[in-house]
Length: 346
Image (cartoon, rainbow, N blue to C red; front, top):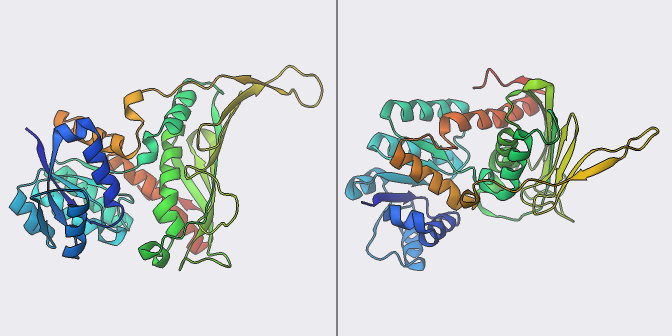
């Protein structure tokens, strides 16, 4: 039998969820969308019409819609400040919950949600869709295979100038909290290392159309004596990086660079004599799990498979809280001007 799902939060981001549900065969076979919830009923009704959802329950009160629908799953697509209330309502109702990122607006709220998921015995996972794109999974595979030796450095640049409008342009720490969490979670996944501490400088550059924190520079100390650096801006006009950023992995035997799209360059030491040995080029391994590299849809499939099998989803909230700790550690460091120990944040 199909599992019954309610989607809460019917803004622009909800359209990506509905497209995945309607175009992915495995999701379509597993899930029946039975309810939509939004503070503005007209917004939910318009979404139902746009996606031809037919006879679906529409409401403004999440708990009431969950009861009416006897839902098994909750898709949480609300703004970050509403995340805790919505996800907690779903878990208490007995739903497995898949939430948009970030996991929570504070570490205390994140811990409360992971505790509640454990107490209710329900799965709570987070949409960290960058883990499920070919480039990131190829980087992870190359690191695991020791292609460039022991990993000593991960360096990520992210420079774009999107004009979103809406809640992002009004929120605090907008780059770190709303976007950098993607890159930093992916870096934690690729490296397989544990973030230990962070020092961060956060700014809102001249000309920024955001209220706060549109740019950040952060240095993370990782286990294994490795370092992660993040340089980013969401008000960088001019030539952009990819939405996935521009990456350089440095290992004990070589480097991998990735342009965030299809461009990989793997190099190790060459045989030239003199000051510099030059380099030689290696082949980049293909992505594993070819059916699991479709971004948002793959996160949802991973979640559904976990619910059905009892397995642990890749982006379970009690793991994702470690990526959130990287964000709030950076925010605290930027506020205080000193490095922050991330082990105390878990």
